[in-house]
Image (cartoon, rainbow, N blue to C red):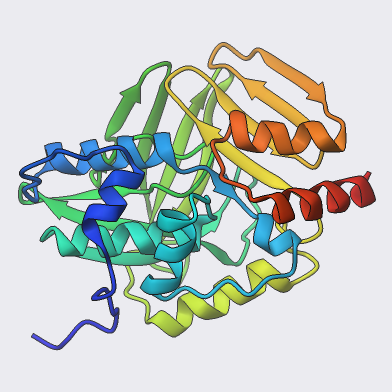
Length: 283
């Protein structure tokens, strides 16, 4: 077997488990039950956020850097950061993991660039779609990589479909989320292997290009069993499975309070001041 191109040796597993509040675990065997426990704990503890993009900071994807930010600094991250760190954790625990690049749909039929990172993980002899870093619409637990497989967590339901080939393009998987008016396409991906440089390229575009949805604005998200919270610039929205949507417009100083409270993001005094200034400029 050729060596993995992913260097996960800097990972401090105990520190990560403490970050997601799974301390005291004496055994985490590479089973589907463990995979579900880990994803549920990660999504509950770590919010999706693009604050470093907004502040123009470097965002390296190596395991040591991701650990410094998400584990030790108590920050969140977006998909490249969260799922690549999560993959390192899973591999350390003995799970076979394949990292994939996906095309975000969010209900659109337009073919977009590959700007999302997701994982396929083997557990109990079966493959599972495992995504701890999509944000509000992301699954809260693994979904069996089987056509038509569904998973319901709390008030939310997700389904995987295997779409047939389109011309010369091979078949691809589509993740869908159930909305009050029917199934909502979340993203699609093909079962291909990608090298670390592929993720670096997609990450660079997503964090720098002016057409990226993450440059020039605040995007923070988290979902739980009953509600999906999103913060876009100064608008805090809460969505429920029955279609209810509550919106609140925040003052710049209230944005910092919500980041710390609703989204559980650790912010030092300097970062809080910088973000408050940037949010005021965006308004």
